[in-house]
Structure formats: structure tokens, C-alpha cells
Image 1: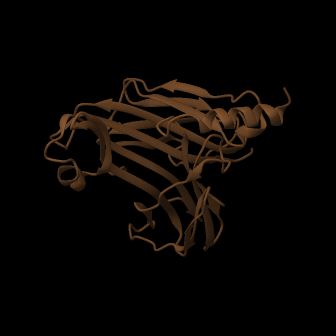
Image 2: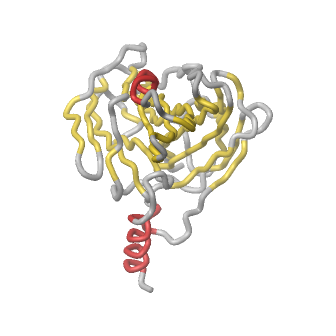
Amino acid sequence: MSRPLKLAAALALCLNLPLAQAHNVWLLPSSTVLSKAQWITVDAAVSNDLFFFNHMPLALDNLTVSAPNGDKVAVDNLSRGKLRSVFDVNLAQPGTYRLAVVNHGVMGNYKLNGEAKRFRGTIDAYAKDIPAGATEVRLGEQVGRIETFVTVGKPSPLQASGAGLEMIAVAPSHPNDLVAGEAASFRFLVDGKPAAGIEVTVVRGQSRYRNQQGEIRLTTNADGNITLTWPEPGMYWLEAETKDQRTTVKAASERRLTYAVTLEVLPQ
């Protein structure tokens, strides 16, 4: 089967899969390192390939852009198409900007008059949206962060929020200072504390155009760290997830924590 036919067959198969089937979620900035203040454009999507628009746009209701001084920056020209969302940001001050979509909600299922129902919504909504007569209610708390970083001029320090699953750069000490052929270490945190045993997947972009995805799979050590050497320049997607029982929603039996970041690795 030719490559295009393989892709078509894979797409047809995916269309028959339930929505819960895993997809890649990402923010893709037009630049991650700038010498002076200027605008950037950011694409945001849920896709089968990286970074290719072929599934659905990423919802940006919970998007925040944080300036180097901590101020929130407004975005311009935000729009949602059939396959991707897009927005522009004016990066006016020097330093590092954090662009993040942080989602916190509840999902699960229940029965009403013997019929199975699904629920997905905000923490505030579940108590009133699930009918009083519901039985066999099973809920899980969901905390997800999707982010990327852009630096104007000299990088500035980045701090973890202390909530959910996050990543901080260890060596080099900044996520906008990554070079092909060099090693990089990152620390994963859950609620601000180093998280051991987290499985991390790293994939280079443009995955549609190669048969071997070249995934790098790592597990955090006792200090929450992973180390890898970047095989070549490009935009990379790094993803991790874990579960625990430290729910903030009383009715939830477990908490699912997800994290995804887009990083650019520059040539030597």
C-alpha cells in the first residue's frame, strides 16, 4: 500500500474510534526565541500527527499568556476553525512568556432510570448537572496543562505554579535554550513536589512525513528528573500523565493529571 493510501486508511480507522481515543494536544508558536519585541502567531490543535491539523481545534477558554513580570497579556485575533485554533500575541517586554491552557474539571458516568449516561464539565457544574436520581455515579477529577514558552532577548526565570503535573528545566536551566546533540534534563512535579515514576514521551514534529515515529520514552527518577540528548533540530512535543487519589472534588474517586509542552531545539 502506498504511503498516501496508508494515511487514508489510518484516518478512516481513526474516524471510527470513540472520542476518548488518545490524540495529541498542542500549542505551536511561530517562534520561540526572538531578538527583539514583536508579534507571534500560535496554532492550537488536537491531532493525530505532530504538528499537523487533522482532527479538531484546541479549546482556548482557559488560555493564559503570562509576561516575564507576571502580568497577563491579552491575545489578538483569536479564532476557532474546523481543524485548529489561532491567536496572535504582542510580546512587548524582554524575557520569557509562558503560554498555557490549564483545564480542571470532572468527568465520569452514571445511570438514570437504568440508562447509562456520561458527564463531562466543570467542578462547579457537576453537582447541579448530574440529576438527583442518578445511580452508580463514577467520577474522576481531571487536571491538564498544555503549554509552550517564548523568549524575547534574555531568558527570564520560570516558576512552577505548584498545582497539578508540571515540568521545569534543570540543565540547561531554561526551556528556550535547547540545542541538538546536547543533553537536557527536566524535572516533573506534582503539586510542586518532585514526582518519581512518571512516564514521559518525547516526539519530534512533522511525524506525518516519516514511517518511524522515533518516540523517546523515559521514566522520571527518584528526584523527578529525566535526561535526554536531542537527536536533531526541530519542534518537539513532550507529554506525560499520571494518576493519584489526591482529589479536591469529594465525589471523585481519583485524579488524572496530564501535561504537554512544545519545545524548540535549535541547531548547533
